[in-house]
Image (cartoon, rainbow, N blue to C red; front, side, top):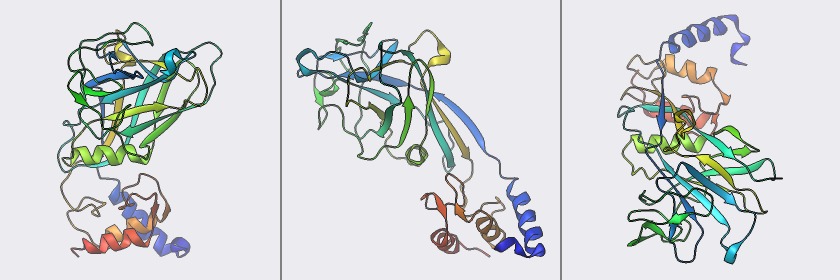
Length: 285
């Protein structure tokens, strides 16, 4: 063990105190765009200006069109360029639940791969309203002229974050992929937000969720980001402008499983030899 020697323990404690001086900022960002895709063979339903979003499977199946998926995007331009995203989560408010619903329903966020729109449609319930110009629908990224490559939205195969949802209340999506997505957007990748997909293996998994237009501002979809400013090397854990033995000490102190910690340079959930190799590649001495 690294700390079996008392002098090592004192050395590492000193390094940890030095590392504690790194300043992390926390930013809460309300969605700047959201919509619901209502399953439809014609792609004529949306709710771009509605007070609620929907995701999941409804109780009955008119013409087999029983799925709903929500789209949500957050403007992360308030995070300075060059910042390191430490963690990210998304909070939503479930405002209505079907009677006798299944509980513990998996909801997931997937990074969206195409730009999509928000028109003037507004649905008062889970059946959707006639799509208006610019709306995202089950078939369209922007109604009526632009289309998804795949009905129901184009998004990454792996979920970025997830949460289990029961009945009404506040829920928070978590997952390492959320921070990775935000980091990419901060670094200049196209930001198309996320597609919210719920389990549809049984009826009544659908949930009504407050949208950004909801009268209750505290219920709006919100992205919470913790980040560290700076454009220096990622392995400069103590922020002194150099990658050296002090940073090696901080990495060794974090050795092992360590989701979301800055010493996990390759973001695989564990601090190990791979991260040490990345640190050495940035070595300044």
